[in-house]
Length: 80
Image (cartoon, rainbow, N blue to C red):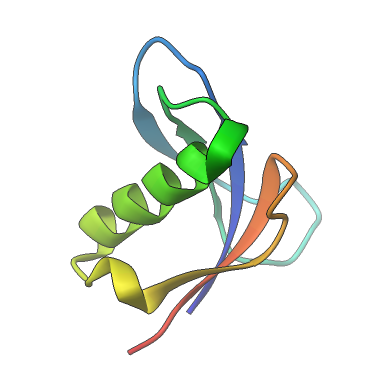
C-alpha cells in the first residue's frame, strides 16, 4: 500500500488526520501527520514511521519512506 503524507514537525500535539483527495482529482486519500520531534537528526521521520505503523497495525519495519526524506511531503510504502 502507498500513502501520500504531509508532515508537520515540531508540533505541540501529535495527530494523524486523513485528508480526502482534492475535488476533480483521482487518487487515494492522504494523511496529515503532526509530530513533536524536530526534523533534525531524522527524528521526525522515525516518529512518522512509528505512528503509521500504529495506525495500520503493522510492525515499524514494514513502513518505508520512499520519497521526501528531507521534505514535508512524503510517499510511504507499507508492505504486507
